[in-house]
Length: 267
Image (cartoon, rainbow, N blue to C red):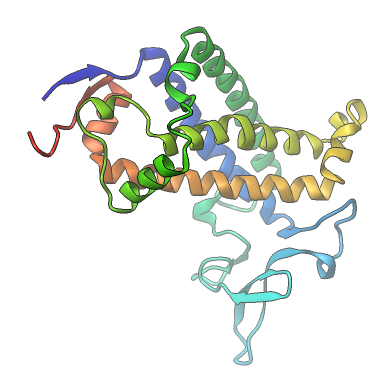
C-alpha cells in the first residue's frame, strides 16, 4: 500500500493545540454555565420563570431530588446526568464534565478566558498558514461539480453505508468534509467568538453594536451555548468517523504526517 505525507508539522502542531484548547474551553464553559443554568432571549435574564431553557432539580413525590431539563414548554427527567448526579449532588453538569471538577466559578472563568484566547491566537495562525500555503483553496474549497445535488446525495449515501474513499480518492477531503470544515471555520467559530465578546461589558462599551447584533447580552449567551453544543456534536461525529475509518492510520497521520492510502476494494 502507498504511504503519503498527509499533514505538515505546522498543521499537526496547530491541530493538537487547538484540540487541547477546545476541550478546556468547553469544560470550563460548563463550569461557568453551572453558576446559572438558564438561558434567555433578549436583554433581561434573572428570572428562571422566563428562561427558554434550564437545567434544574426538584423534589419527587418520594422525597428524592430529581434532575429536570426544560426547553420551552417541554420538560424531561435528566436525573443521573443533568441537574442531579448519581451521587446525589445538585448541579447542572456533573463534576467530570467541568474544569475544575468542584464548584469554582472564578477558576472556571480564568481557565475559560485563558484557553479561549489561546484558541483564537492559534486558530489565527492556522488560518494564516493555510492561506499562505493554499490549503484552503486547494483542499477545502469544493468544486461546482462537488456541490451538485447528485454528488452530495451520493456522498451522503456512501457515509450512511460506511463506505470510505480508497486509493487516490483518499488523498482528498470529500464534499461533506469540505462543507463541514468550512462551516466550522467561517460560520461556527466566528459566531462563538462574537457572542462571547458580546457578553463582556467592556467589549460592549467599546463596540455597542455587538449587543444589537445578538439582540442583547442574554441572547448572546444563548447563541454561545448553542454554538458550543454544535462544536460538541462536530467533535463527536469527527471522532466516530476516525474510529470507523481506521484510528491507527488516522492518528498516525496527525502525529507523524504519514498516511497509508487504503487499497481499492477490487485490488
